[in-house]
Length: 422
Image 1 (cartoon, helix red, strand yellow):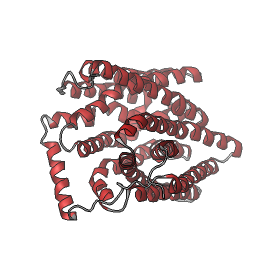
Image 2: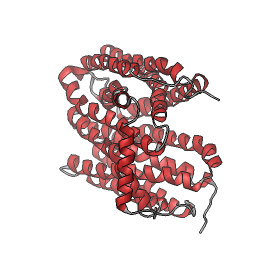
Image 3: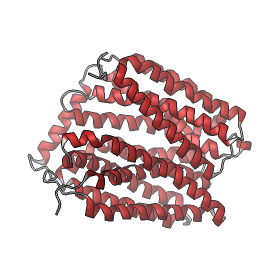
Image 4: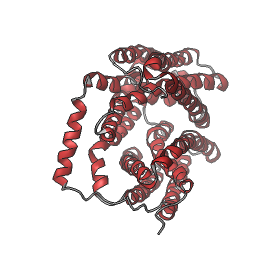
């Protein structure tokens, strides 16, 4: 049994496998339900609940350390995700498909969140500190590739199958069978190719009671940090406009022109959001990272706030103009996602900044839980608000919510040297 393998043999596939179920739960499910006739209000409410496993994952992450190895958790979770995807494929044609598939997406979400914990822990155990730095860009790249594959290529495939088969449920069944096959393949590959580092052992120091006591102490210390209230408000409300927009964007693109949407096909949505949009998001993130590394977070904070807020106005334009030109629509989405990628850099850097000090890893996990909660709660009501207000008024409301982004940012106090290249 090999304790070490060439990181190229497993890092790209592991992080591809980490991203794909998240995309399936958060994005592909939304488009599928829309094409299968579920209302906007129900889609937004019930798919927003699927954020919950990522909200509460810090509460069970200690048990991933305590029970079995990280390698074991990775393989079991990949098998569960594959089984969940197959279950969705089997039940799409069923009479009560909405309730059944939602249950399977719940299982997939919990499995995916647990897989995230195990995979990130395994990455640190299987690599030296030098290798961790060397391959961090590779893992991020393949995570993005998986996002494009899921939001772009798979949705485009579903759109192609909708046309070629003439049956929307059958098209999505075939798409999810393909996803399931990919994940079962990932499980089989990783069962052979994942190394078995000697450090990957269950935690044996201390009792479960001691572990829980330490966790409670760590959790409490998060809220005792200086200006914790301002940090938590920032984590919850910085993305308030985007939390609502993210749930409704694809639904707006799909809805007929007569209902205020743009009337795009499933294939077009996959191209516009999942390919052009993700490329814009990635470029914005890269530029944001380079800017912050040169000038520091404090210097770039307000430009990033403007960048994440103002481009939301493209949806106001699209809802009023309702252009039929795919190039115009793609350009608007690219601009919005480019700004979001640039502005989101400030958010992620602040989470790192706030997590500094003792218990850094645990505190960062709690920050990401608040991040998920900040997306979950506004998303739950976005669909009902859109149905009550219509797309035009809804997108104007999203622009008003940008005031919350500016307000919570004004509360922050940041060291001017944080993030600068030393």
